[in-house]
Length: 187
Length: 231
Image 1: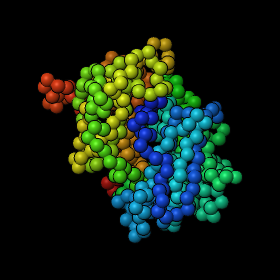
Image 2: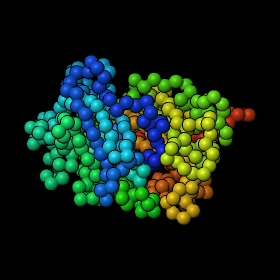
Image 3: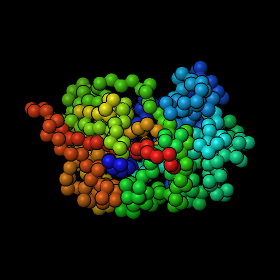
Image 4: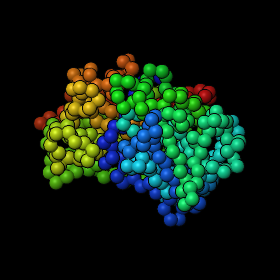
């Protein structure tokens, strides 16, 4: 190692113009294959107070389970027009809304496949290092065999599993701390 | 697969999430340790933002409006590298900052300092094949914040980079060399002492443009790949 990492700092409260303007929270324009889904992520602090100045990023495979990246060398279809990246800030209700497609499954290095999931970054004023977590889908039979969920204490697994509301929207509250603290990952 | 994974940061390279002198952190930091995730395709891939079309005005923050912004014009440049010193080609850099008076073009900033109609303070650039990038901007001012009595943020520019993968995502802040406010700033001081200086740009007389602008060099180092097939 000849160079030392640049340390992380908080995003602060004033990122909006550069990081959000021009980025759509709609990842899947017409023509992209797969089941259209709506995701609503909400952000709470350690006292359960909503965070209205946070930023979520999501990164996911397409509906075929292929990441749009040169290191995913598998022979699976790439969707033109689907990069798999989304970014949205939280609103006054602490919520960020995304429209995307349900991702396909991707392999696990030790063999087998992971359950369908969306990778999430959380940023906010007061958050000095990005917080990485995942979103899984309630009712997915593959959850039981997912190698990442197996690393997590069973009591805390529900913090990673989005539930579908009566309107069909997938919702996942993310708690930075407190009694329902979300599981964060060192990626 | 293993050769594609990224090295984990060593202790002391990043701030602790809970840095109590920075008073927003106690209610915004997890208590439980992060679970170490073996890197799969989900972590070693990430957005290139290749479809984002940049125009030249995005990296020159002094030319985005009708007139020239007030303040000291500066060149901020450097390279995006990994821990092996290899360039991170085509990396997208996004920056934001306050104006020369210390005020952000943002409705949430109510500091009693003038807005500059010719300065929004946002910019983007894509590094070249050698990881080199350059912005033209205005030196940001210091500004007060409510963290503690008589708290002032040192002049800084926010930087956001993805690098090659989800694992290499970084948001940071660039500071100016030897700013006396650094010694009083709990955000800068949240970084362990041995690593702090990496957030200070270096004054760069070679790149300074005579009769036009001073220059600062800020190299950014992202996580490197594992050299051996180990994780």
